[in-house]
Image (cartoon, rainbow, N blue to C red; front, side, top):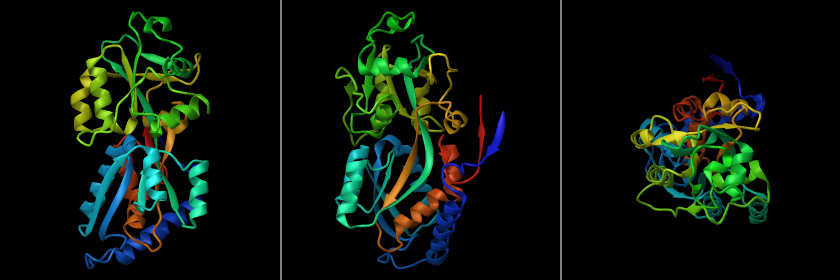
Length: 320
């Protein structure tokens, strides 16, 4: 079943039009070729600190931006959400892309610095839970996941699943935007079990792929990644035969659904969040240009290809 709906409840129509039109005007004004030493919204060099939880989608969008604007050179530095936001506040970079907003302490630091920061929502994603293909589990509800990841349920058989194996949890660490999403959905004081295996950052390969590899190598493991890793992605597709994506229900009496765009947008899939691009440019430069691209027609259409829900443009989504 297909439908066309607007995400105007996410960002008000008037505000949305002003941002998109203003940013598109910047691209028109500065879209011509210029000196490589002069940064404009479509030319120059810019280092972007990117939340590794959503690195594939952001890098994909960045490559498309550079294809359209040959004088623009974007480089991406990957880390967890807390480190990425810290880099922006500390002045190490002027632009970041994050799977979460600044928290209260980070916002206080931003205000105290006296600098101005621009923050823009550009997409919604979901947190997908993965298990080994031979694990008989098909779906779980939010309460079961909370008990598992808190360490109160230790065996798959404790969930009435015919699989007498201990639950092995693999994660990308407590400072990741993914862990922040779990806390938001479970409880503010919720803590991940100390027994969970947290994979460290490795410059040679994204954590999401290493989480997938860990699960493929351990039939009793469960982990999570952004739904944006599970689209038309060659690295995921070659691993997909060894993985199973779980359907998740909001309540024990609710309908379990897949982390696909229609269910994420409507909120039937409980683990969802907004993604943000933030920058501290004093004058319109590449950060403003990349923001305009992410929120413009092409960037929003690419969101659909990346298993994301566009936050700006009207969208056409599919249910099962």
